[in-house]
Image (cartoon, rainbow, N blue to C red; front, side, top):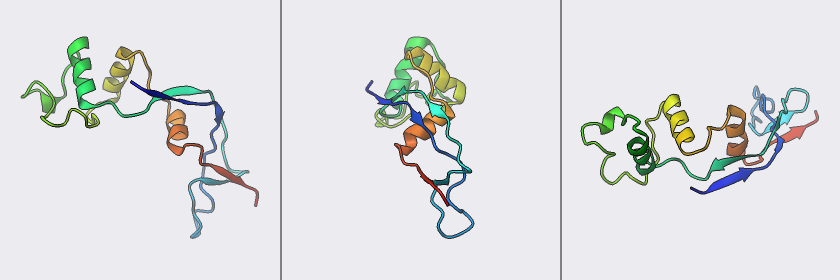
Length: 123
């Protein structure tokens, strides 16, 4: 599965610029209030895990099927390419380990989701 490399950088997060007024923007931060941890570079899958990929994991690893699949013994017809959406945190961890990967941390997820969009302001 294709992965993207997210390079090491500072993640700027905290309270968006003056959310008490109409100029709220979640990507603008007061320098004095922002937190800026350094996040080491990491890899993240380009796309979500599909139903077909999760089913293959269940078959190969002997992991239990989601409750909604048990009656048919597989995912619903025509949904193989859709994102799998019934995983608990422990299911997601098990899938990631089986695939030789790991789940991103909360801050890694935030950094990847923003795609570098954070601006510090000095006011």
